Length: 189
Image (cartoon, rainbow, N blue to C red; front, side, top):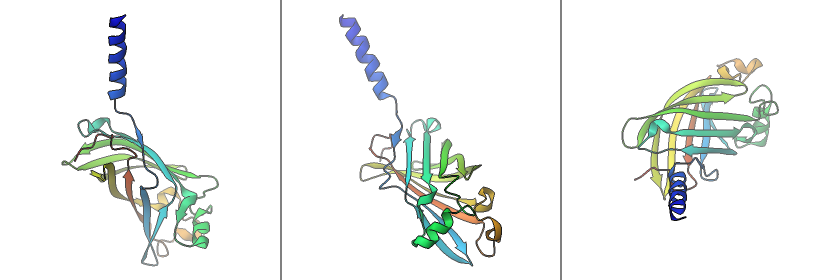
């Protein structure tokens, strides 16, 4: 009986100490995209994002993360522009309502900087990306920040007349700040 309790306690302790993916704090997290239209930078933010992160700086190779973005929530600050980019020529939010990112690997560069790679899927197409990411603590929460450039035409964003890169540049800079819900993601100051 006593051995059974000790064994059960060890099993529960082991299961609870294994890192678990933690949801991101959607209200504190931010994903934005900046592009150039007629040479002028334009920035919009995705209002609806969710995801999970499992990161331990002692085992960065075992890091896991996934992010899902509601493309209809892309906000350029104007209702008409928002409705336009949700159309088929742009994000095609009706047929492809979500964009997603799945982390492939994380390699340390120094104490807070890492090189990440993963796959970004938008509008039914997937691209493999590599980019730097800073991981730190802020107000007791784990924070993952970085940016990566993508080509919108690869994802068929801006079809028809909007393929003209003299109107809207092909390169789009995606910036992110993902904040963990709890401080138990394993990142230490």
